[in-house]
Image 1 (cartoon, rainbow, N blue to C red):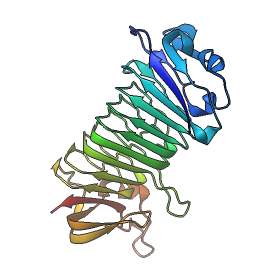
Image 2 (cartoon, rainbow, N blue to C red):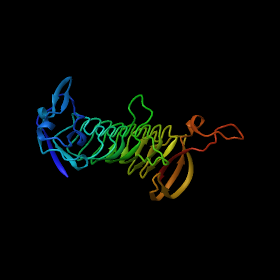
Image 3 (cartoon, rainbow, N blue to C red):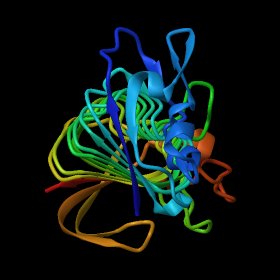
Image 4 (cartoon, helix red, strand yellow):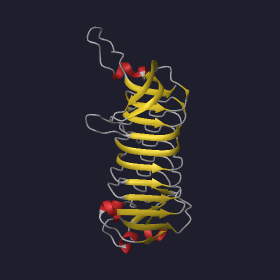
Length: 283
């Protein structure tokens, strides 16, 4: 693994757009070439070298690791659309971290702002602290959010995380979020994702969910009335075939959207009352 080390050298009053900081853009480049890559500070065009010290040079894509030190809470789009390699952030980081990434790995030793892993298509994103709103979510105007890959957040994720998640067992796409706790509307509009919450959720968990699995090992503070209690289970099989054991109460839903998404019963001509969405809450 070839390491390229970046360190923020200036205090940022405005957000710095740094979508060029990816292993894809660094691979095969010299130190001077990396320094010349474009970033935007407000509406001003600049270079990586204007705001970061840079040591090391890029190797091949999957052998390139970028290590960034400093308070990056005002640096946006690091790792956006990356396809391979690794990024390690030692500190807090700004919005859109790893958005639309399709491969590689990002590790944040700190907190991340809104839209981390938005519309992610593969790879792994790990955050040791908390994450903001819309983790793994679909951007405004899009109908498909996270399609594949794994997001792990040791702390809490904010509101509307994993909105419009879109997985597929036949296509072997298993978008997964594992987090310590979650805000409102976790998994809203879900179409085939896996969400595992080690702690509690607030309200409207799984709203408008058509397909997918949400496992809450703590409590849902306000459960939607459109979910129907099925009973107690001791084992849950996930989309990818993995199994989780423990005592859980199983709920099906969201039944408020069955009229739009369920298959029609051939005899009655009405929705079949069979939702593939599931929420499991620790018993």
